[in-house]
Length: 396
Image (cartoon, rainbow, N blue to C red; front, side, top):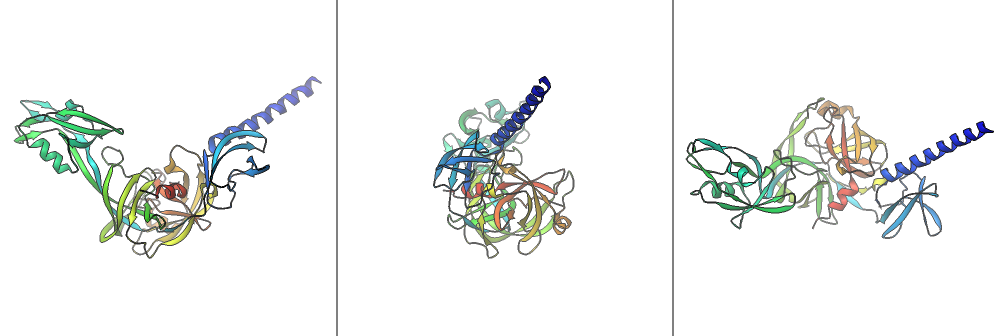
């Protein structure tokens, strides 16, 4: 009898552990909200909720937004999620490489350097409290937008102090900066390096005809020196043509080299964590209409990326989606994929700089955009969900 009780207790403990595991996994992995564009039921039907007297799967098509309690096997509560329904959305998928010309909203402090003055080394900007990564927005209440303006104002003076307003971590601060006279250079110096623009290349993911916007990159543009997101004032997206490919190897990031063209694709509007967005001038002739998949439709398995790594129009290349994070803290790494196309591997060695934004296609739908390479294994990389970029492409 005791042996039977022990066996029963052991089996009960195993069952409880399995149930707890499913509940914990569901609470961690299932998203806080689900956006659905079609009728497909993407999540495992182990997770359900009650609605209208019926048991429904997680991505049940309901009008508007509703709160639903997700249950394991329709019995054990797991978590409450917001279910949002939207009519299917279509965009014009591109995959074309383009040139980026970006000007900042303010002037970024990208470094500092001591100045020789009076026989000693001093750094006026550091002494004032200004730090690398600060964005200078005004000097003596006059707005500044170019590095030349800042350099001219601070360096060409008689040693008077200036009130410098900066933006740091989303908050504004004002410092008193007093440049010092450098005998060696024969002028006043503030002891800091500043920048107001950047340029680069990327890939256009799609054109959102409904909003008149385009989406690209799948990640933000950061300043190369500070690592901080570039505050966008204005910018242009221009046509580009691939001229050379530096192949990726383990531990070394490859890259595309391009020549910028004179045609303007559009004006840049937003530089965000999910991508670079703008208002387009015209939709490319190479772009084709695809329906945007909800994240619940993305599955492990075969897929394609649409990318331009040679002269000519974008080409489809084989990839495999190996991992999906339906709920994660870094949306730029929602999807993990591996390049399986031998032709692409022969050309690039894997994922290289300039391919960011390449559309990920699965089952005839746009499911994501390539974002980052895994440097030690360039055949692998990350992608962001397409439904995130679709939402963020509705820029104002």
